[in-house]
Every structure is written in structure tokens, then in C-alpha cells.
Length: 449
Ligand SMILES: [Zn+2]
Image (tube, rainbow, N blue to C red):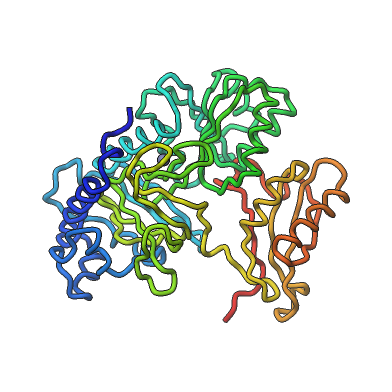
């Protein structure tokens, strides 16, 4: 049973979002340092922002704004009831600087997140009878994916496998082999993981001929999962004994403590919490809101939070949204129409605009390529004016020369840049569990002045 809010008429849902927004903005006007200042600067009052249409009067908030002053984004209202003030937990998001930025959740926010995840898991196909293996790593700061998978609000059993780089003072993290043992021993039926980690785990499980026959569903988040990678994972699961495993992909944001979730495999991604989160698309150049269906920057607004509160926050993905009834699931909540592209991913190589996601897609679809890394560097590292080089570092199974030639030809065809291929060991690219994700793109070129 999915929450009734998801199937309201589009008009009723918009009215609900308008009401929630008006209350949220009123709270910000009373006790949110950043938005109090922004409203003053733009001579706006909360009463000017009563609907999601009105929201367009407010300037966008950038990730940089949050990173520079995360405390200024916390609602501070001592008169609120205790559940709305008490700090329940903190998740961290990382930006380009690598410095983790805190996202504060009060008890109120945590309960909202549990409700959101109850819907999200239901849409993804997780059932109360499932045994969910939480394969998100235990990292040096709490990540939303780990925290929110660890507590099931739908009554399923959760096995927290705790992979991750060992922390010597208290080495509680488990190795990949120990994680595999747990999945087998506890007969997990659902695996929740980051795609690159899951792929390595499945590779190792294949080497050990482990029995994953009970796995029926895989829930992925944290990285893109192009069709080639999805099929690669499915083939490995089938070889491990799984019967018709389903793969569900989410698009999650730490700042939201929520995710868009596929309502069918490979289908549209739905906002499971339109009562908590409003999404819009804006023109990347002008910042103006774009009509539904047009691609642009994805922007999020909290509708009912008490800890970190963000209004018109630019998430950094380019995609398009629809709000009519989803032809697949019938929900009227926002849905993402096309696979999102991270805007900061596009880069120029020898004058050609290259989207590394296209290369990801190609490499993930090559069964012989076990791991890969995309590196941009200068031909002569001591000469900042030498030519750009696109280097593909590959760990391959099988005959390296043939694989290299095939990959080079496919990449040249796709991005019109001739890549340099370097063959390396798997561990040189990615040690499973060492971080949240594999580092797939490295740009070693000097930053432009
Ligand atoms: Zn749908």
C-alpha cells in the first residue's frame, strides 16, 4: 500500500505543496539565518511566497552557499516543540573540495525520512518479508545511503554488513569475503549498494562460487547505472544462482535525505515525497524556471524540514521533469524523464566537449573490463600548455591487447578523442569499500586561471 498523497489529482497535489511551502517559508522568515538575509536583500516577505509559482521570486541557492556556511542553513526556533528542535543525526555530503558538509536532521526530519523511505522501498518492490543486506560502506562520515538503509520502516529485516576501509583503532568493518559470507548465511533477498561496490562483490562471489540464489532484488544508488552496467550485474547475479533478479535504481541526494526511485525497471524515477520535497527545472544560464519536459538544472525545495532547510537548491544534475500522471505507476508526483547528467562532469579535451558519462556507459558495457578510470592530463605533466590527453586506465580479464583495441575504437567513435590505454591491476583503481564510491574520473590538468 503506497501513501495516498502519491495518487491525488495533480491539482490537489499542487495545492498541498503550496500550503506546505507557505508554512516552510514562514518558519524560515522567523528563524533561518541564510534565508532571513536573502529575503531582506530582495525585499521579500514570507507572504510574497505563498505558492510554488511564487517561489520563482527567490534566487537560487548553490551548493557553494551551503558548503561555506552550513550552520546558517539550520532553522533556529527555540519555541518549537522538542521533536522539531532536537538534533537526531547528521549526514554529510561531499562537494568538489572533498570537505564533508553536514546536513542536520531533527527528530521531526528523521520521522519524515522514515515515512519517505517506507514509500521509496515500497515503490522499489521491497517487501516486509525481505531480508535486506545493507552493503553501503561504513565511511569516515555518516552517509545518507548507509543511515537510511540501516533502519527499515517497512518491517523488513536488515542485515548491516559494514563493508569499508578498516579503521585500525576499532576495526569493525568487514572484508568483501566476510560480507559475501553474511549475504549467503543470512539468505539475503535484497541487496542495497553502490553499483561499483556491488560489481566487485559479485565478481569475488563468482570466484568463490557463492550461492546468491535467494537474491531477487538489487537497489542501487550513489552512482549512475547505465544499461550496460545493469546487464553486467544481472548476468553475474544469474551466474550466482539468482532467478530473474530485478534491478532498481534510485537518484538520491544527501541534502534531501531522499531519492527519486524507479517505478519499474529502467522506467521513470518518481519523487516519493511530494509533501516533503518540491522539484523544478531551471535554465542553467539564466536561472529562470523552465516548463515541464524541458531539460535543465534540477532544483530542490524542502517543504517540511526543521534541521537543515534549503529553498531552491541547485542539485547539480541536468534532467527534465514531468508532473502529469505517470503512465507506469499512476502517481502524480514529480518524475525524472531522462537519465540525469552531472553538470560538472562535462569537460573539454583538445577543444572537444566530452561527457565522461558516455565513456562510463561504454566501459561498463564491456564484460572484459573489470575496473576502469578515466583520466584527463597533460601530455607533458611539466608543461601546462602541452596537449590534453584522455587516458583510460583499465583492469581487464583476458587478453589485454584485443580488449584495449576494442575499447579505444569504441571511445574514439563515441567522443571523437583518441584515448591512451593503460592496463593496470584492479586494486590500483578501486579497493572495494575503501570509500563510498570508486573514483571514476580524475582530472590532473592545471585549473584555468
Ligand atoms: Zn511511475
